Image 1 (spheres, rainbow, N blue to C red):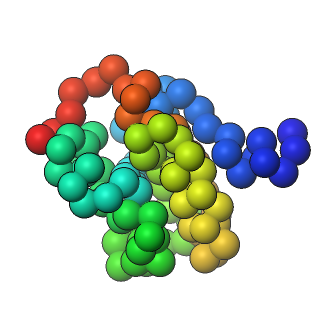
Image 2 (image 1 turned 90 degrees about the horizontal axis):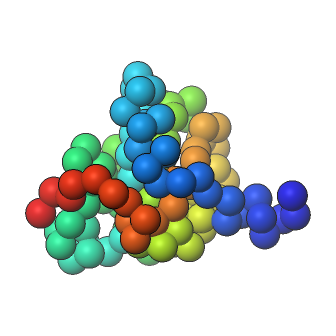
Image 3 (image 1 turned 120 degrees about the vertical axis):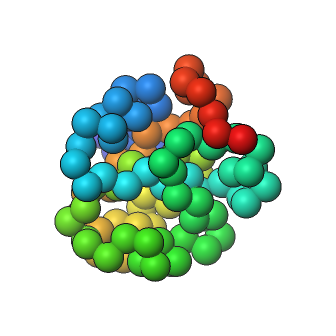
Length: 107
C-alpha cells in the first residue's frame, strides 16, 4: 500500500459504524461543516469540522481511544484521520462517507 493509499484508506462506512457501535469507549467524528452536520448526521457522532480539527482534543482526551471518522465522500475524513494521528492519537480509522451509508440520519 502506497503513501496515498494509506492516507485515504477507508473501510465501508456501514461496516465502520457497526464496529464503532461494538467498540466500548469509541468516538464517532463527523468532519463535515456545521450546516452539513445539521442537515443529517449519524446518531452519536461529534461534529468537528475539518477546518477546525485541532478542536478534537476538546472532545477526546484519551489518545488511545478508538476514533472513527467520516465525512460526505471519504476525502475530508481521510485528511482528518491523518491530522488526528499527527496530534498523537493512536487508534484513528477513516470509515468513509455518508454517501454510502444505509442507516438512518438524525436531523
